[in-house]
Image (cartoon, rainbow, N blue to C red; front, top):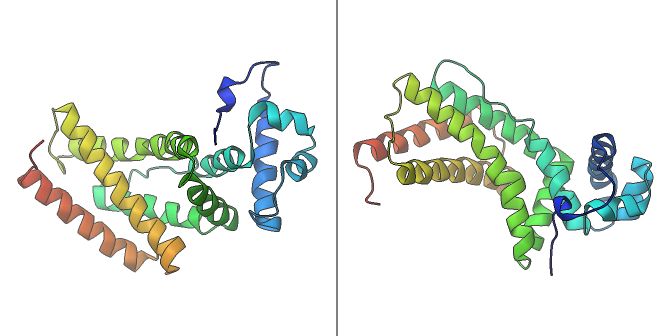
Amino acid sequence: MHSRSPASRTGRPRSATADAAILAATRAALVELGWSKLTLGDVATRAGVAKTTLYRRWSGKNELVVDAVAELFDELELPDSGSLAADIEGVVLQFAAILARPEAKSGLMAVVAEATRDDALRERIRESVVDRQKRLVLEGRSRAQARGELPPEPDPVTASRTADLIFDMVAGAVVHRTLVSGEPVDEEWVRGFTLVLLRGLAAEAAHPAAG
């Protein structure tokens, strides 16, 4: 199974307006029809474009849904609350709120399931969702280091590994609680989670793991 990126397509220049309409229509179809009944034809009708327009941009439903869900996560913003703890709490609550949306919930779970047997789709999820949202970790860490809350990490390999760990802990915990356990991500849970995360960062700073 082969997944192609829209950027690899050739032909007429892409329209940002058409792309936005298509991705919005995809999310609406996810809510109304669910993953199993969603078709590119239905999305095209909702978006007011020809079906061929979708195929010029996406090779199939999987890639389209990844991009539609990824656009939701682009709404995430790291608050500048004056402390690392408050910044983490703010972005975790935003993340949980997005995951609670029906279109994000059904879309993300479906494409992750499909990605277990499609390496190219897994890579697309990594590039479109994971790598794009690691900006939040990098920005938050930079602010915390400037405030003296975290030590500098001059070694780029160590710094990259730490950023990956932070992202995996936040995303893994929130996705599991929201989509797997079905438990609320409320302020009390977020405070407890943030405390555990900060303790882990403090321990890592005091006793860095060998590279």
